[in-house]
Length: 298
Length: 319
Image 1: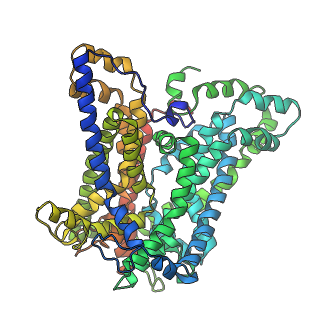
Image 2: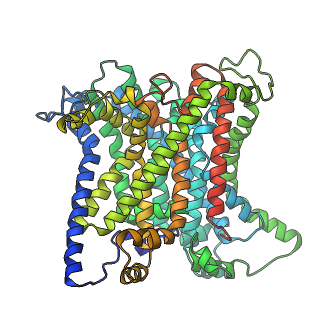
Image 3: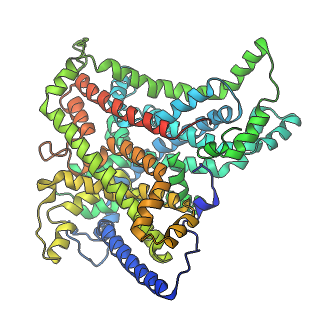
């Protein structure tokens, strides 16, 4: 599966044509379809239980772990929508992940160009290294990163954490971006070159406009990954006023012994909304996960 | 263009061909070529610098620190201790416990759980009617899109003594227990299945779409039942997707930290202390950076092996 927006990646429906059997087989197929439908629906309901609990708890001021249908109030949201609990962690998350994503996308567009367009002996080893590093467990390097950041005094620095987030997303970003750029025909570029455009102009005027959907996919995908990242800011940032929402959900859960589960649920929902929305944008654009599933397959 | 069929697996095959034809139209020689090559590589510089400083650097540090007795306090001199950290690890029953738990977690939640469930869902969704298909995929993907810590919190609430799972079991007149204390590793495994299955489901849905319909129909005409069609036709056709998916979910599961840490913090005792959590606790709670780094190196090497096998499997003849 290539990393392209091929139509079949977009369409999740399998080919409509099914073996047209005899009448008895047709009715058996109908029966088995009913069983499959019922099974999948039952499964979905079970899968949904934890999510429904969160939604109900968020509007229940006396929420406990037992699922209960309350008379809904917005009390929990009113409690958490203040600077310390919600706005600052969300803003921190936006700065960290927005900055990291921007850096990652700009670097990967630049890097993708020579990788996609020029031949060189170094190209293949470089790409193999990039592909190899997409698989490395970032979790495992966090302790040395911590020691390194202590030595150069970057611990508890938002720019430091942003740079690290960008670097850790970069291999996958470069890989995706290069594959999207391969989809832009080189003929158009040559025409522009004959007209006297230089590489930067070609990149800006010809290639980027044509691979805009790819850039958006990489951007959204990188941002979602960073927004959900807990371990990196958990290790690299210390001061409470610098922590992003991913870490403050955790401190919320562990700090209050008599945790206000309703408020925590409300906060979890608020924190999750941006990525859910971004995912929907992605899904609309590219058949969402289906294209990404294909992209991730390599 | 020798292997466009193979290339198509990785990059747009057609684009690859035309690029090749156009890219090397002119080949200046000598010093001019070298200068040109450098100039062409210039856009790579920001990425290379970032990767060298923040990724290759720490990996190098990781290898170095793993052989020292560095402590969190730092000031009191760090010295080279050879393989002490590793011999210590293999004698440490907590380390072997962490290795076992990591194996259980990876095999149980990824290789068996996510992989099988994802495949089953993809196969069943092909047979289901369209609304059911979209409901199922939306629900499964919703759990995947949620941030890790939120998923951990929801699963904590689900498995808690007074949580939803026990309520359901109660309603069904089945025995209940305090899951997070009696079977914590099972709870975190299920949590990881709940959160991660969407990935396998998406990979397999895409793969099943590529299975030629004629092949399945031919098998049906020859009298193969649904199971035989799955085992003998569909699965062999998508075997490469299965291998790639297994590699990728193994790599993802190997480094899961937030989910387990939110649910149990490695507890009760050390019953859910997988390698990432053990590593974190040694380094930051016991202040043994050197020892923690040695464990990190073990994790990194295992991850690197899987990653290496993964890129070999992609059969990257050319990019």
